[in-house]
Length: 172
Ligand SMILES: [Zn+2]
Image 1: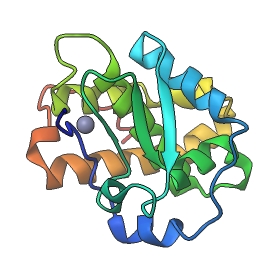
Image 2: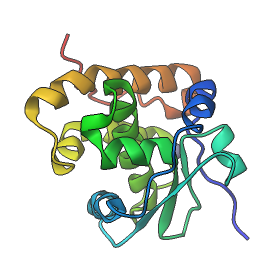
Image 3: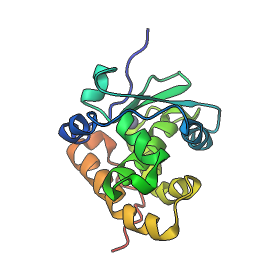
Image 4: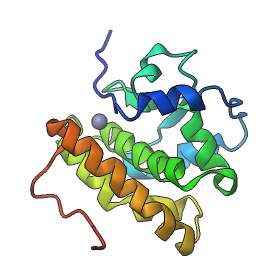
């Protein structure tokens, strides 16, 4: 039992296209567990699945079951973070903001259920997450506009994700 707390509904058509890619192998996933655990402030794991394996991923890039100790991410996101050098900027930027967002849902804190609070932290801590993933400053600067794009699209399209007081680090 449990309800799906969160679905990040982002560009599902592209998710479907990316789902055709080869699934990520097990190696390297520990890196994602470690990253998620830092933001969740407890040991959590990242499950990587294709939309064919998990139908929820047809409409979301990632989700958590509130109260669980894992998140499920679209395999294309995992692949981007495990092999960033082979990844395009847009999906890497999107992947990192999604993993941080879901991690904050898994953190035991008062606002773990609050989409706006969680999303605000995801965009504010994006660069920290990217650095923890081992990306260079140069790459982070390149992918950051994509993270902002995903963030603003999400909060515009789904008002429950919008926190007016959020100090989004827009560079312009
Ligand atoms: Zn969420």
